[in-house]
Length: 287
Image 1: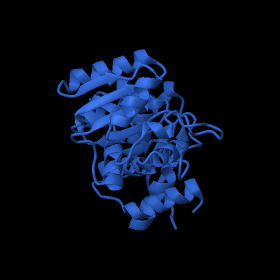
Image 2 (image 1 turned 60 degrees about the horizontal axis):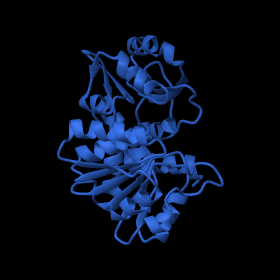
Image 3 (image 1 turned 180 degrees about the vertical axis):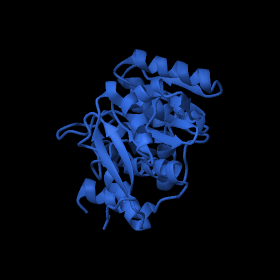
Image 4 (image 1 turned 135 degrees about the vertical axis):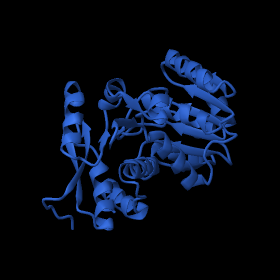
């Protein structure tokens, strides 16, 4: 069990709201497994207070901080030092309290690619990738897939203009990567079926009664399908993909590996992944 002493080193996640976070479950499991005198906490901080709170936490010798909605973009704009990962994605989810100051990182992209490798023994190199959803998560996934060597990225969203904006970003950073926008249901199905990897990056599927945007006919044998939603062992998207012949996983691995990467940034130590995974599965699935 975790024990608190006068030497306990705190870590934390900040958000507004914050009650939904699973970060304390996995990080405290790692801390306990390592036998460290440390604890990981969660704090609700209003976005307008973030850039006052972070320097105070550094002064209080916090070991490191994670950020969730709506703080990722606030920190990106407010921190003077940014890692290349944060610069690419335009958001910060991990703050390192280094000797030279506060450094903003983004471990979401690392978590996505590592989860793909773990589930399918392959990330995105040489792949045609179809990304459903071009909001914050979809944009990050598309940029990371391009950086990791995808040969093409097809974007689909109810907001077609948002797709075009992300496509422009990809072309600016990675001009060798072909970009396309699926403008309607017919193109959506055709382009999804062509893809090697199909990624679901919308909130659809989180509520009871939601139906998968992509139906089984949008998938085929030999495809890989990845749903960023992690609170269900088998999402409606995964069911549709599997019915169509694809192999499918949810986003729990991404959550796990982005957290493990943050832990390593703060401490220089690779955390115990199996213990972190068990803690997440217990918190999410009750097993």
